[in-house]
Length: 520
Image (cartoon, rainbow, N blue to C red; front, side, top):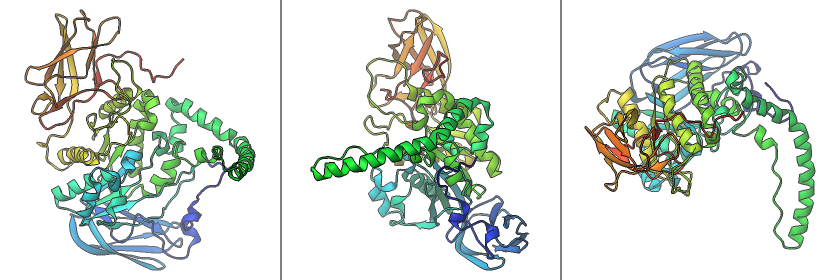
């Protein structure tokens, strides 16, 4: 789809299609100071005059390809290489020659999501102190600008840089802490690609045609198509309102009074971070195919009101990325939503709890994935928890345990496995309760609600039993319990963790109707 009723940032605006240039052109993702992914084939691509033979030379390898007759695009694949912290030169010869300096080989990860991933180091707790020690010349950073469009982009404005006290403060805090842990633990170069966009919806990260072709999202796409069709009229109405506002604002200024609120432009939605396909086309597409180890993701807040839909939307996004990258099921780790908003005195329903459940279910829906649970470090009055160091550490645990041979490292939060009811009590059993469960901060176990057939939830009394991988829950108000929930709220009061301090994953044993399910 290519709407014509609003301006688009086209490939030509970024330097033109390859066929328009009689010289070699490379995308920004390929440049000085980059890190190539070790132990796998790495694509190197660009554009040149159609029919030109382009030769890439690196680390004793030489690969050639002819630029295509249509677009002038060419792609070669370098053979797998071991990690190498000694800088090397990568040379590309076509109609002209490019020499990329200071190229390393190590581990490359994409850092995606919305504002909690975008949140930079200088905004995190002790981020100023960590920035002072960010003297990591073998860790490399690159950020992709926020461009929302329906037109697939092939490039962006950006460049790789070494991690220093000057470059680290404005980079993703979670990305930095995750990458630093891998870099120091594995003792290899690490490259981090930050493309997060605050407030973004998951559907904006998926290519538009993929969503259009999937009947599960027909309603979502129909809503957006209606908005797009209404855009010309909305834009005309906006221009009228804007002209009226300018007159009123001038009058207010003359009278030394506050100006009325400026009307919002419908253009913001068309070029913004929620429109299906927008971020994929403008931000992700220019990097698709670059050799990576995996991706880390922190997003979901913008989709919480549609948590039921997220059960299928999120796994689709991950599978879609993997299909395009053509690297198989590369590791994909995400952060479960933190606790946020006011604490409620009584148990009940929660859209945020349902979104967390959708994230947990994604672990079973896709291979080689996992989530970092942070239900213990959120802030009631701030949707952006400042303790990004712990978030990065929990993501790093997953990668180190599952991808780098450190399987003995506690990494996955305990999860609900089964329940048994007897004598008015519910006994819950959990997987991944490494080292046993314990109550954090105080001895009373908190966060469990229980109900009977009437589905009226009350707080339960909970006790850790068995081999410390079981919890017994009961309440005198529920003689015949049928279901239990834990940490089922926007901002739950809960305190069960493992010996390693990993929090128990929020869960419910019931399958009662979801508050975010589509209404008839």
